[in-house]
Length: 383
Image 1 (spheres, rainbow, N blue to C red):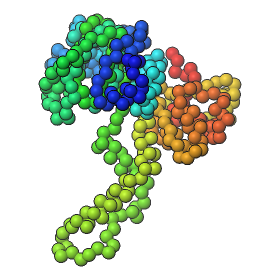
Image 2: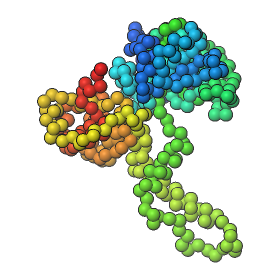
Image 3: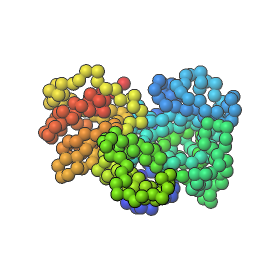
Image 4: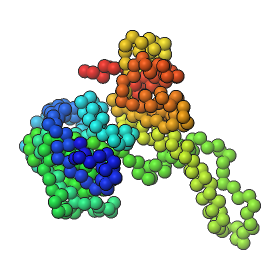
């Protein structure tokens, strides 16, 4: 899938550094859904979908948000528009299975698989993403042009609901047409422009989440603030007399700085916060909690009778060892301490059957995750 590179070679030479075009990354690839099926998904309530029309009635680069209906698609021209549907892996199991091929990257870094359809000429304009993305051609052909890495201050076109670059120059040899099964990796900050070359152009975008520094600082500070005692305050015991009582001197600034840095510099708390943040579901309302608590004995009986538990679509799991025997299992923005082997099993991709009950605390943990909506009985989401 990486064009003959090992995972170590890709991570060392390309990941977050430079693009990589991989011809035939998925040989004989068959797209898990058709353009009509993608359009049908965009008509459903709760599905995040956008329609970008380069020559819309309301002006250039018109953006509309779903859910849509058949009349929306019936009025569209034969070219120059794009339909984008987020998190298709949450709704189509065959799309979700593609994520397993990216197991050389941390699972908690994965965001979702967006799928876009466009007739000839359809695009969203030259732009920059602030996250890593693998662009897999599902059907038809799309032309990709790259414009190199651009800074945060690159000017964008004003007055539209898209961040389209004002200036875009194609770099030498960075101009390709991708066919089904071809894939293009792009690191953050790389200018790119994709234009459909056929009437059946479907592109799957495997995106990765990366919190910004401002989001991280605010979130971590809020997490710590919920746990700190009110008695932990600024202190200036032993300070020297000031020549002017209105002066804010260097010593006072140093004391405040020390209080903040000592509070923030807590690796154990940082790990607990980070695990919760990176497992927060993309759509919180997609997880449906149980109205009534499940009896752990009933769950045990069901597993012993051959039933299996699976991760709910859109759920995220991770684990972090606390010592040789205990770990924190992170699930959908929450964290619970449990046996290390149990955390590893629950955070894996395998269905959970009666064998899981041999691990200490399994019945209680699985019951809690089932009631929270993070786990579900196998077959529950089949149509």
